[in-house]
Image 1 (spheres, rainbow, N blue to C red):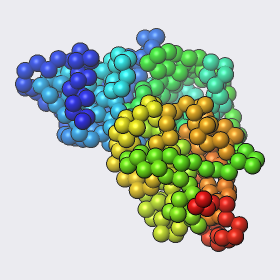
Image 2: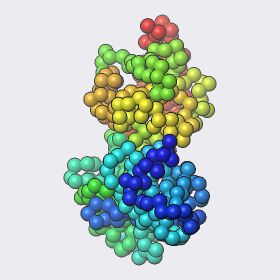
Image 3: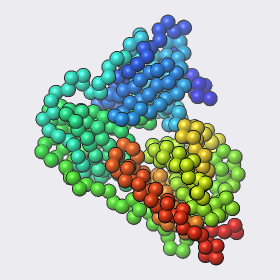
Image 4: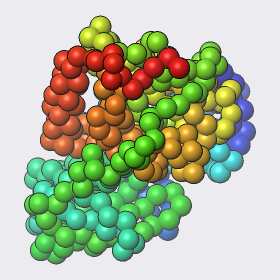
Length: 410
């Protein structure tokens, strides 16, 4: 399927397949540069290894399989986000093309890439005269509040941004003099964060393909998010319940089914479009394999970009295969706040993906966790893993009282 889509989209991308390829791109590390909004450019790094490629962002190497060459064009599909880097091979050391969402009519984001360049922004960065290391309170367009978490070693800069919904994944860049530049590209959308530091303040721009937004920041070692367990509550008198189709078989699945009775159940909202959900899946999948014999089940409630079971099945099969997911995934409909709240009326609100519900053996909800901070957040992720394991040990060690169980087969 992916090959047909790639060949179809090539015409939209204005990349001609002219004759038979005489040149193959070099195997090794490449540096690409996207052209974003307002004339900004965002660099990214990747490695070609043949039929496989890797997007490189700081400590992360994100694998892309099924790299193909057709004529004088090369296609690097990002299966989990249904996107593709499609480029003309100008010569063995140069590619030019676009980054495209396969299900979107929007024109792709142009890029150009050169072989053998390992640096991100500048090959020989100037000495940094300021430090961006540590935590910052960040405000975008004077209304969107984030926490910036940065690690600076000399002029090299890495980090991420945290919000109540999760993190923005791995950023990489540098500090030169009093100016900083960070970019990120994991196959979903390229991002750029650039600006200047003055003492404990920073100003700059946050840029994607559509627009550039103003950014202000203040250094704050105590910068912290609200407690993720305090943001979404259970409504009084409304039990957690749902009956939805299995994403792959269409069979109706209910939380009251015998499979879940007497077990601890993790119910998590997700979507194939959601990078924080994919980070959570990458954690939950191996955890479930290692612990399912202890009496635990996981149910992923997938809210997708289209209210279409066929579309959802195709997207979720890709997710299932990439992360080797063995737990149940149900199709919950379109990713819309109003609809999601109707599917899960027991929650005070349903606007953040993932929202993860911990259900005790007796059917009571133990706690609800809003958002997900993945590996890019460093110590925050490590703290979450430690807390998650402690919570699950406690819930799995509890004995179910059949007389007081709230979950039944009714």
